[in-house]
Structure formats: C-alpha cells, structure tokens
Image 1 (cartoon, rainbow, N blue to C red):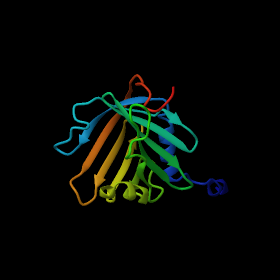
Image 2: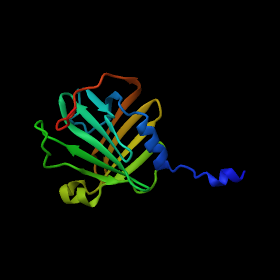
Image 3: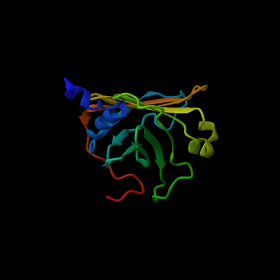
Image 4: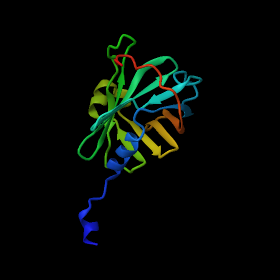
Length: 178
C-alpha cells in the first residue's frame, strides 16, 4: 500500500507523449473530417502523416498534402506542457515566410488530447491567427486527429488519420535530409 503512494502517477501530458512515441517511424493516411466549404488546400488530395523523427523531448511529424511536402508538425515536450509548432518549408528547403506558428498547451491535458491556443509568436507573425486553437486527439490504435478552430469565426479544420492501417512512408519533407 505504501508503494502506491511512492509511485508518481503519470500526467496527461506524459501519457499523451507516450502514445505519440508508439507511432514513431510509422505513416498513416488521413481524410478531411471538417473544412470550410471553399477549401481547396486539402480537398481531394492524398493526406499523409509520418511520425518521422522522435527524440526524447521533440517529435516531428511531416504532414503531406498530395505532392506538397512543405508541412511538419513539431511537438516539443517541456517540463509539464507540450509546444506545437508548424514548420513550413519551400521545395528548396528554405523556411517559408509564415512558419513556426502554434502554441503551448495550457495544462497537462489528457492522455488522449492536448490543446494549443495561439502563442504570442503566432500573434506577432499572423495577427489573424490570434484566436486560433489547435488540438490533437489520439484514440490509441484507432485514430490521430489534428484540429484547428478559429474562435469567433467559421474557420475550422479537422483531419483524421487511420492508425489501424500503416502505409508506406513517403519522401522526406522539403528541407530534410534522409
């Protein structure tokens, strides 16, 4: 009984991170669940996420849209939070003008969901994104869902990836070396 008190319970953040790490090296296909009616960025395109680079404190997940390999979600573990950034690159590997926006989770979250409101760096870079909130949901062994909501607007995206079917990995994202 005393042992139970001595064992520190894992936080939602730690459990979520553990679930992410189980996906390391794997690639999954996704589909748009929710998008604005006039969306042309993701509609009718092959969507893939590849949990390609896993370090102790950072996980990088390239998100390919058709043959556009410009996007990588970068998750960084801090002491008790997770930072989400969006790394955007040009085909030559150079950084896009709009890159590294995102936010820090506001609490430890849960083992299946982390929420990231826009941080000040994002507001400075993209003032219209000041009310953005991103969240990632994981149903272990079933789905990984990336979501964006512009609070106070109709802007909403949700892309679900099927974790039950691993697919072959796609080429490295722009700017990466294999």
